[in-house]
Amino acid sequence: MKVVILCGGHGTRIRDVADDIPKPMIPVGGYPILWHIMKYYASFGHHEFVLCLGYKSHVIKNFFLNYEMNTNDVTIALDGKKPVVFHNKHKELDWKVTMAETGLNALTGARVKKIQKYVAGEDHFMLTYGDGVGNIDIKKLVDFHLSHGKVLTVSGVRPPGRFGELMSDGKGKVTEFNEKTQAAAGLISGGFFVCRKDIFKYLDDKEDLVFELGPMQNLVRKGQMMVYEHKGFWQPMDTSRDYLLLNSLFNEGKAPWAIWK
Image (cartoon, rainbow, N blue to C red; front, side):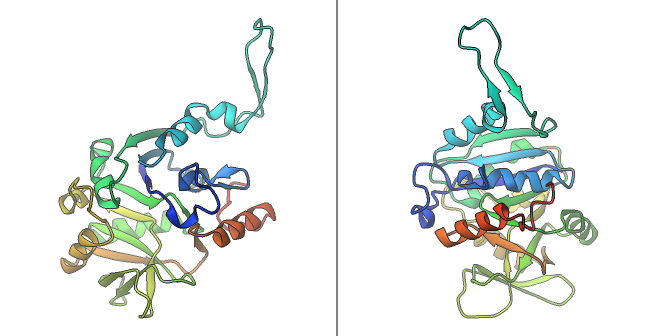
């Protein structure tokens, strides 16, 4: 199943950490958080990625175009007589990464719509954000999605802050979704979605379309969104404090998402 990752935002809330690279490229333990997300999915056997690019897309493209150089030790003979030698070969030889320009200012719903052609022929695909990690069991998430037959499955989490509240009927069916509420209690959307191809009926490519507003709320009204409750670790990187936390966990060998280590 292909994995679509939203990588186009400006990341204005974390500019104090890095204002010269897109948010998904901010490093955790020396590698971009985007790389960590991809490594996590790959650990469950999902190696095909579609990256929805926007702000400073060239930085992400350059990282993957020069992946050998960016991830390995290298020896270069300056006399020009010998080729460049890469040491400690990377383990991502089976990855296929499509980098799609989805617009500088497009919002999340529009970005997903614009990559429709790259998941054509797929009955289902996964979707997530390029700035959050967790230890969600991807196999169980996919199995749950395939079992209920609805259009969208969202992973529901309970982080410290409020980002978008999910209410369910106890059987997994989402009954209400409110983006970035500060008042009510309940699960919040942690991303890590699984989508049926019918999701595109709820989307258009108008740049101001927010996936978490109109489309998701329409799915709820039609009874087409389910929640997979995740009780484990989940952490977005929205602030410098989040950045320090994620780096500390990874560098100390305590990162719950780094299951490939």
